Length: 158
Image 1 (cartoon, one colour):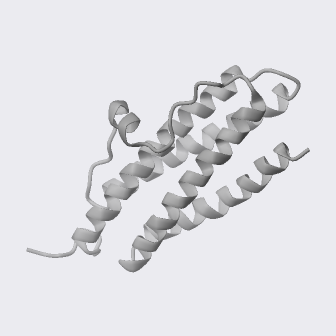
Image 2: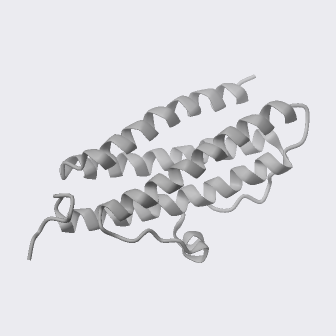
Image 3: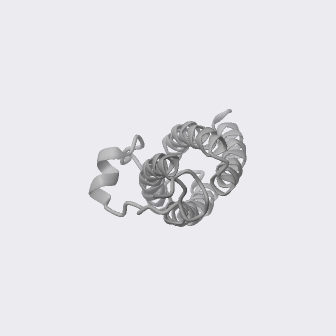
């Protein structure tokens, strides 16, 4: 029996990586739904600005959710699709307060910090097993989200 998966990576390490990607998928999914709620329900003086920014963000998250699931499949494993499991495993939880734009941005920053931490762990593991596909994906996500942290943080600084 081969110790490599169909794309030539260590099968055992690929399974470990897929498990971490499934955890990331759960966190992205909860984050996505929270941002949808912010977009739909934000009120106040910054409504027009935040409504557009939240839509940009949830569209971006939607694409990443699909990419993560497809990467899990590429590694030879099954992406989790159950909301009940996402709610159990995600470090990002459902947001109750969705009307206040400043609270929404603070929640976004907290969620991004969670994602960045998880993605760096995945980046390290994918680097260890020479998984350039996952490594590249995580590097791109991290670079993009670090910039988002700067921008959303600037919005909160008055």
